Image (tube, rainbow, N blue to C red; front, side, top):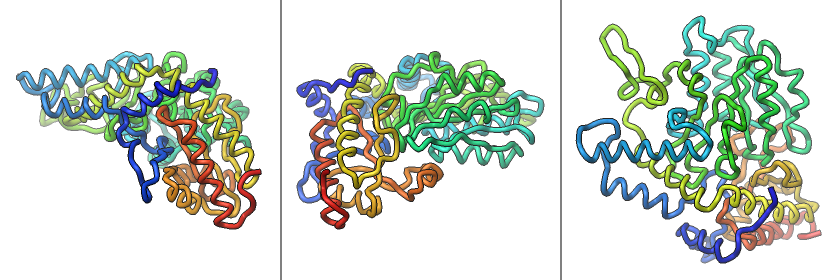
Length: 426
């Protein structure tokens, strides 16, 4: 993909759909929001979709024999269809969850809750393979699965350049491997994984693949058929949608084999005092009254992304990322944690200022109106592998501008002056 900025006038129109970007902070400084990897801002189309539903049609879907319930059901299922379309899936393969963390836990519990004798049931002697680059949401559920079942957890390391060391696949994927769970795009490193290569290794031994796509679906074209994975999770709030809504996509034949995760109303087929049977997917995994307005808002976010163009979003962010990487490379007191080029790279850029804690860096940037994230970004083992306790992360979105990248760099140049660690720019 060729980096290509969205033209200035069109970008201004896009930014105009995000009223929060007009804010000033810290004594009247313009807000420079570079923390979209934590949560993105929401366009008016999303805010309006949620509000319109709540004002005109608020009701519980798949319940009630009245007009509002019918309208709620239609809107809820239309959102499911829109989301499926974004990732090249069928609506019945899309399960709504409250976020990607719940989606990944749902997947992990399937391998311990499955009936004895099920091909999904894990036990002693089986192995789960993850990577050192995982967000805690795609690490701890698998730790807990192994604790419950007696299976063993193994992991692939990361190269000094900030990419998964996929040369380890031949050694790490064995006949004992039952699940391979890995990130599509690292929330720290920004590196984009060669998914087909991992899938091919997993398929060769019959292992199920689970992909954390939280940092790819908002930023890159994603097609589940092309990727070839079995399960895929992402969150709405990172892709211009509401909080409280996420997605687990799965091959339908696999979803049919998976046991229920949460139980209660809505997800049942027949209930008797002696026992119950459960509805087919995706309903089986959507217990209780669903997050209706949030699902509708996420559907609106998907349509908004498609109107802008997902490939254009990716190209714009890649151009901004290249600008930032070039600027950081000119500052010898900044150490990048992640790939130094934009090849197979997302828009999360993490770095360390030698001799200054990330929290202090973040405070200097915040004083200039620049919003970034500092800490271990829910990826503690990954930070340990690079010998750092914390990094500063700028994570970009389609509404960011070249001027905002320059504002970040200008604010960053204040750090050496304040902490006496050397000159500003090389």
